[in-house]
Length: 293
Image (cartoon, rainbow, N blue to C red; front, side):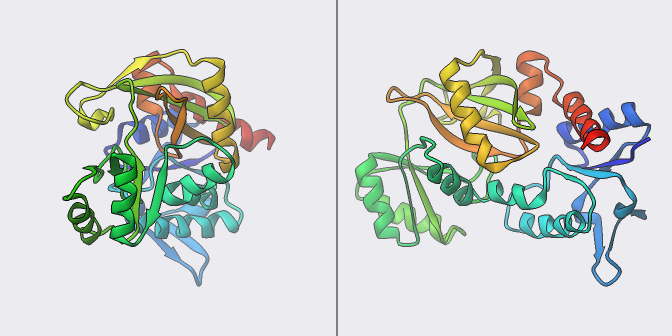
């Protein structure tokens, strides 16, 4: 039987669900915390609590760590070493790297002609304030974040520049400014497995927060995407080539836009909104790929 390791968070629901799915199917389930992985470059081997990762049949990356930050790139580099030495890794670390950094993800989407909210990126607070003045209202977004953590809403006006300076000084040297859209209080998540659509859910705001994340009280709801939304999500995820991904889409009056493509989301939303067991589906997908290429 295959021995598959899951890179995840020890107390993470999605991470544990995926490790348990492999355990049921293969008799082997191992949830690997990257903070406890040792990579010996001279020997070309990596270990987690005595388990040699090179000896496994594959690794599946569910979560690379929490909270989000540049150190996640270092962890991906460690996994990239194993991948380039021949160990199958789902999704490949080099591909995940393109979605961890918000700016990298946004640039890829824009270059592919995918509609995104009006966005300005600069290191100059004055230029960022000028963009906020044009937008009227905007969201300042850290380049590494999840569930809207660290995002700040800023209004055009005399206080905008000082607000932006404080945001920059708080550890955001690159200022990512995105226009605050007129949204219907919900956005959509569309999940894909190997480029194939798996399911869709909506995140509905609780009416007391500007964002729809569950961290801010948002709730998952069932949703059947239109052909237009499904086509947009399919085109948005295609340039990234990820084995599992979730596309976040909003629907302002001027037309749908893509917020981001994620390599880590989707499991809980699919389950709570539609009882779709993404862990089961992903485990089957990985085992089939290992058996048939």
